[in-house]
Image (cartoon, rainbow, N blue to C red; front, side):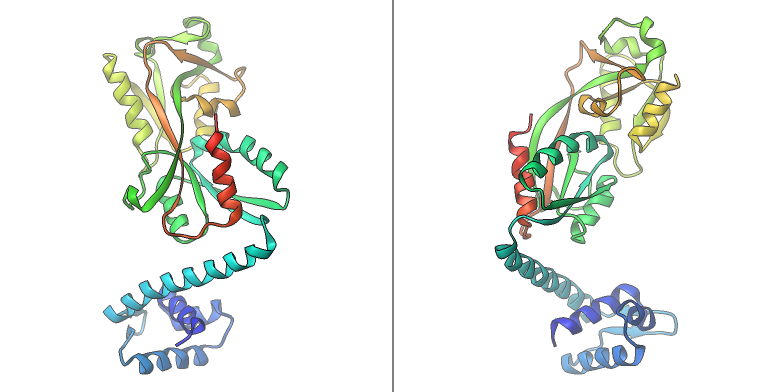
Length: 298
């Protein structure tokens, strides 16, 4: 059995049909069926239970799929590592970020490209579950996210470079500015105003953090909208729909003329931020250098 056959097997396992797998592999169905039969004969086991609609992995097939994914990832990463010995720092660096951390990337990318102009970037945005899945599939090499990272895997599964904590600030419509002081506010002053919070079905920590802080100051926030998009929340605030409490770094992407940012005087709660990548996985030179660029992050 060779690497080519393992790739064939994985494609069949992922698609559940030989016809569809053959199409994605740009080959005819009969040769792919013969390859599968040859693998089963060589191993002396059935890898799939067959029915008219879909191929289902047997216990032996599940085990082989797990081992094949690991072997192929190691093989691909080894080839990449060998090539990088000659090529140096270049190519495409794939990064994932949660929506509330996007504002931390532009400056880092600008500084990085000044040193390494042959590196280009591919950026993905999503919640912790989506980005964790992309990391597992090797679609991205690292993630910029709020902590704790709320993906299904245990935190011990990741290497984490902790960045400086990000203080929360109040964000209100500019039209409300006369209701508050120039640049500061107390949490209690937000009681009774409509709230907008950043939340997805599976990423809830920031939402919970804001609610807990409000309660610690004696009021339950009047939440009128939960949203997964920072940009949409900012648009709603600009239209006077409500207020929010966000990490301060988010505001660097939005002018203070559209919405107004106020420092919170009597609350010192912070948002923890980190760069994450998989343990025991080869990182490209560009990924290693990009992570290192955050070690002096301020």
